Image (cartoon, rainbow, N blue to C red):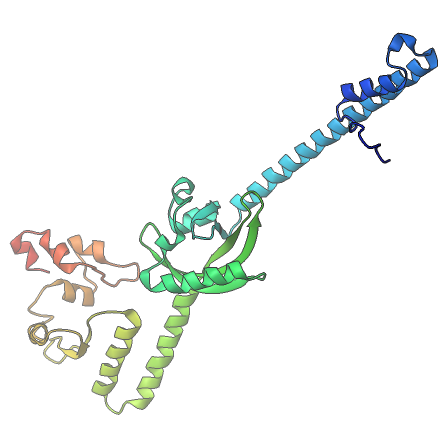
Length: 308
């Protein structure tokens, strides 16, 4: 219905509508005929009931939305996959419990932290380009990246990301799922190493050539700075048959090791005879691992230190 030029717009509140209806009927209630008063009261009562019903519907809708929000929050928090939401500068806006376990931080410490802090230097640029691609695209993007958790462990994860618009900030965010594929990648690397070792055996003419090629291959695969292979000779000595990365003076000294005369950590590792403090350096599979041999041996008094 069109409003006449110069007339006031209809009021939206109940009192205003009642006053307007009353004015249309003659201006004062005592001057209105009884049928008009009854009709006015009836219309106002109907309208009041309509408002109460609408209010009930709104309350029910709000309760349903709150219930759905809580249900979604539980599904998000307890999802088995690590889930993160990053803003356009790479800050963590949301994280579920699986993500906090994967990255080694409580949620309060993780929120607003740059995700790049969990990336080693060599993975920073690749992840930057990946996140830009996610934000520009309308479809899911996948990638693989190395992560370093807050506890120091290195992980290989598969990323699946998609862009999502934040209605409250009108910004586009990056939603990520992180799948730990470290064990799978390590299994693939072991398989590839085994295949490469078998191929070397078929190509090399002598045992020395084969062992030297094995040393170089394992050194490259493991990232070791120095690596060698010892073989026991007839005199029960343990000279290096192949080596790479060691100082020649070290090799000359170590080639004199004897199973009969000497007792050092290398021999105890070879003979699987760990004792005392050695046991703290033994891996679950029986190997020795010491990331700082100088610091480890330095904790012992000089007479004890000679045994290492």
